Length: 113
Length: 113
Image (tube, rainbow over all chains, first blue to last red; front, side):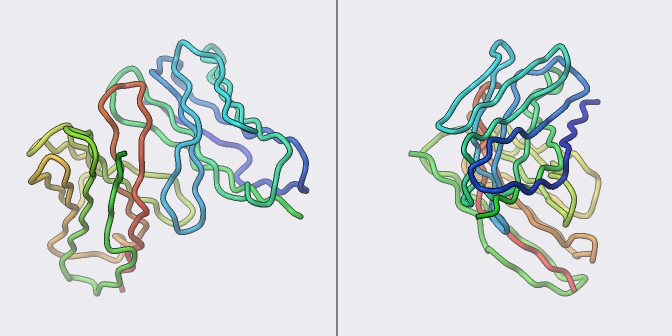
């Protein structure tokens, strides 16, 4: 059974810093891995999706990488801004039992002005 | 463009009362539809998913049920709510392609008192 872990649970950094959020998964047989952002009391917004055949995806200041062999993905945020403060969740779509994303518990990120 | 609507945004219900949460998707046909629950301090738990009208798969045995009476309508119901049903309920959809993103509604905060 796929398990997804995100460490740390919370992270606080000063504005302007580059930072990395970590995501690990136990089963490397996945179709894709997705990163989401969730603001308090809101739904999830999809940020990046990395297909199993890809190693990274970029969107603006965000870069997500995928290393299936080690069961790890990272979300790199460049030049962080207070508006980046949110909870970031990763989720993998296992190759077995498709259509069922398995989520990590998220990292709550705070960017201090 | 595709949009997902979920209502109500907040709901306070007494224990033992019924529940009906509705979700509709516009701008696409034959989407995969999902109900997730996010309890305080916990990750997202998949409750139900549907790949077509009348086709419902349950992930967690409980006193909740789901129905899909129309292609783009997904309903979460309960006959008698429990205190443990409190949480943040999220509806989501995807196109069905295993490498397509998952899109979420804005969520319903349910408090059972």
